Image (cartoon, rainbow, N blue to C red; front, side):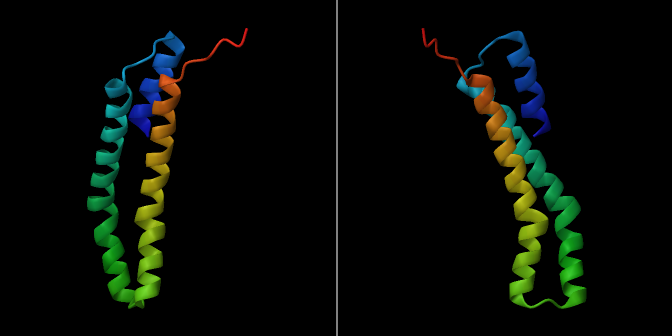
Length: 94
């Protein structure tokens, strides 16, 4: 979200419209970085917490969705919105 947002804001301010690849590669970078952060920083402690608390399967699924899936989806959606916004062209209605 940080990479794609920063680049999109700079491009919008400069008035340039990036290519499809230039707009969506930062989104891919955001997804990879988010996946790495969640894999190394959140997933092992979350599994340890689940093991210690002895959650049932339903609570385990809900917990992992709240801790891993939901933040990842929020970052992917916001990054995609900025990529789309940077490629947007205004139509003249007159």
